Length: 170
Image 1 (cartoon, helix red, strand yellow):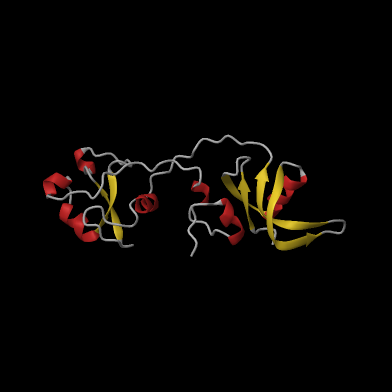
Image 2: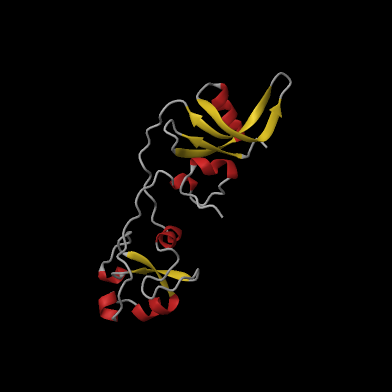
């Protein structure tokens, strides 16, 4: 129970971290955070009984620069929504393709790497899209830095949903 996830909000209610219950209890005990949501019962010691937090908010503002997203295969596929950028086929069987090939001095950057299905990648081969007679569905670019990136690919608990407005309800 002490290793369960707790959503940590900044003073302005912006999600900044997910920590475990033990760390949240320490923050609450030191007066550095306040309890906003509990929903998992109580934890008992010999002398006190505390509610187990689910969402806490820091009592001071933490200024953090937005983290730049690292260029990786997984991030490219997420940016391109698991779709081939040449034919639009949505699949999880994709490869990476350099728009300007590496052998033609193409860089390994957000603006030069796209996801491509295997047939399109073979058809394009080591050529530029113009040379291969292919067109990109949209121009590749670096994803916008987001303060909510810490919650990406995490299980969103029901108690957290009112603090994360962009999460769609099933």
